Length: 166
Image (cartoon, rainbow, N blue to C red; front, side, top):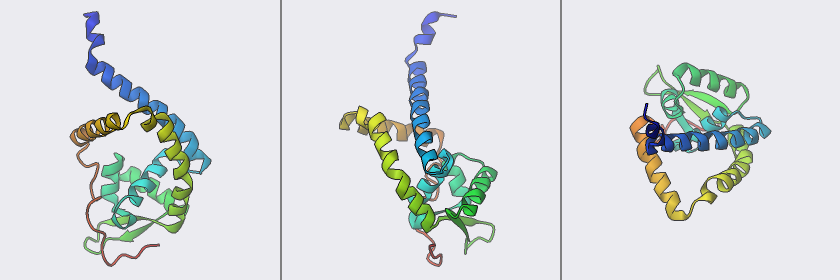
């Protein structure tokens, strides 16, 4: 095989993305652990908190996190036992339910976010000039939308009007 194929910028781009992700993920995981959260629990809380009504249908949460529906069910079960989330029945579809952040979940997220944002600033966004960051965000959104079209499922729908918040 031609040695030059390994110098292909496509391989370099993916390799750098994977290395950057691994480095950031290790820093994030240590900080999440200080607050009693796993990386996936933090992701679930964040996705719910950023969604209308602080809730998503379980199927949309699975699509956004790239977890299987059974994987989301296990995570939500654990987080519900810990008081961070609750489930609500979907009024328009008896087969669906919503995962909803509780007040305790929002409090845990509020405690975790300042340190998380410091890590992001120090090791990611702070490494880039504003125009570089805009370009990176634009590029990452295009790639994300191409490889993971369900990544924003349910995040733009208005919350059901008859579902109260905890």
